[in-house]
Picture (cartoon, rainbow, N blue to C red):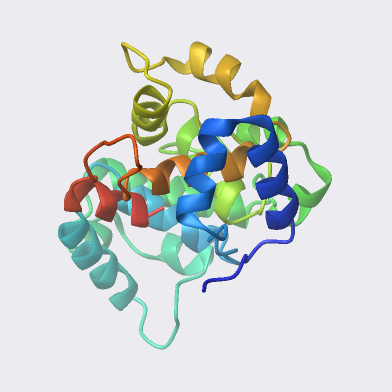
Length: 226
């Protein structure tokens, strides 16, 4: 039986099960909250930029070649990335824009404009504002970083199609909820909206008693990249 991996997991499961009978059923089916805390900071954001708008196999291949540009290290430092020419970065399959985005991220970190050591003193919204100043990092990327890399318990990625589709299915909505409607719906899940989103993602992998097809293999693979 899998065990919870984040410190707020037990309280989150109890709160969500009490606050929402639909989510309570999903939690009963899925079990422990499986969010795995990740220590990566610069690496996680650079990887996300590489994976944008690419299928898993192609993205993994480009990511592997990118890391291969820097022998002897698990992942390059911002200084090492900035030392590469645009042509070298593009030689591994990065587009012109992605090469620019990764260098912009590296420059922000090198120059202290993006300081991960400050994040523990900042609110979620302050961190999102800080991250989205970097080219190629949008609100969804910042929210996922908060959830999985910083361990923030109350983040709702309301633009995520997986979460929207899960809410539409399980709450029997006619249309997929937009960001505004989903945020309103998610108020009942505070202060553990991160856990609620994770359970909604996982719910697409199971068949609940009231029916509903399993997610496609491609959809599951895309979510695992998060």
